[in-house]
Image (cartoon, rainbow, N blue to C red; front, side):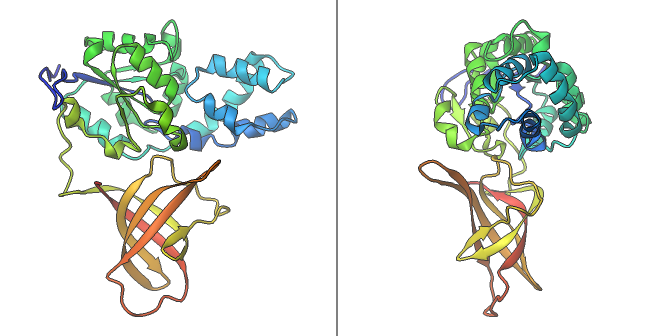
Length: 330
């Protein structure tokens, strides 16, 4: 087992192992299953309350099922609800894609011999289904635990303590990376350091109990925790798995069509990116700033576009396709 026992930049003990959550941290399962609960509730004439559901992020399934049946006054038992929704989830989970920086982090930890575990509030069977298209991940994790393999799920610290025990690492030398407040609380209760990467960016201020709060895993700096640093930076630029944007560019802002049928960006896509923009036959280098526009009651995507090396030839059609291939460290 790799040993990183020395001091970090802030004088604290180095981290020896990392424990990762799955849903919303590594996999974009929420986007893959978007609309499932809405569809199921509609069968019973109910309308989903988005605010309530946001607060349920990170719950173990049994608690989630009981809460849904009670809150929406469904004429079925929690067990029947579970059977209905699970059959719908199974079809969608296999479509879940890795979140920004997830593959990079897993490959990095494995390359440097850092033990790392998966600790999810999902049942173990559900974890296996969700990761069915991520076979390399399954091979690289030292430990994989679901909530049904410990006495209590998060926010209890049981699953994190069991993961540390199976890796043979003291809790104080473990770093937890989580997206939900439930998971953050569990990590702190276990006596571990916690990095939060909130799924709900407009609720980031609620994560103050975490030791660090990031917008995405691309911002994670292992060396701050005594772990080997990433070696893929080129100055302050990072090659990434390419992704596309499209819409209408007006006054330096990209307006995306809501009915395009394409999956919207995950919340964790944030920061400065570079790539290419195509207007009709024009291809122009571009820098895109992806962030949020916070209103009094709303939180909307804000994508600013800056065209580089633009010729004097006017662009008549504002419709644009953008391919982003790199991330710029702020």
